[in-house]
Image: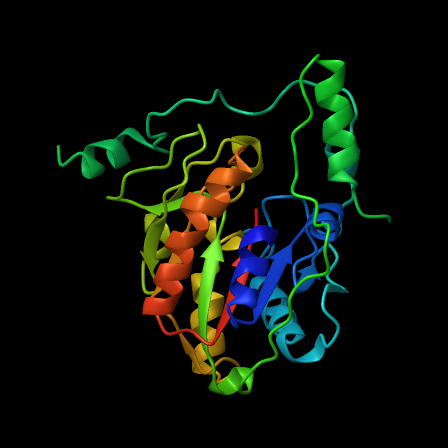
Length: 119
Length: 161
């Protein structure tokens, strides 16, 4: 993501990355970033909470006009409310949770496969 | 609470399993910076998600360095949004409510409220778990650039998973 942001910015397109992994944002150093301290997979808000999603997005977009220093990361004040996810996310032992690297399309449902294949 | 340090944690987790470390991109130069040419309220915004989102009826992403993109029309009903990403464990909630990663309702509301001047007609989606930085640079990014140019956007919102 940071690679794409830096490439687009170099072409003259202002970019803003909205993510929930602060260290990965820091490493990639995109031109502008907003950090929301939610579990990975929730960059734009809590599930089934349209008000939170609207707040996160509205607050994030302000950074387009407030970040004046390249590489700045704005931290949103949004709080997930329950910190129990952090221990597992930060665990240094555990299984490999990645799926096998396979070149066949990985449909979420069999209906999706039928639709896409015209069946 | 201090933010989770994912790179350290995942690197140690893989090492304990005997796996090579995932190579996150680490910038070695300061980022470029393009000032906004006009206010956000007058700008057309494009959106890129790396969540592996596809719309029902589209071909899903695969998990081995899939460098292709999908275009998700901005008016797609949310119940038509699906996900295929190599780190499926982060998709449990998004598969119940896609808008915690692809917030079409909030985007349209911010456009309607005038916070952003206009939206591109489609969200660009890719599968962010690509191990080859060369393929990201040479295959993925040129496609994203081409679509954003076609969409004549002024600014781009990038949402990693």
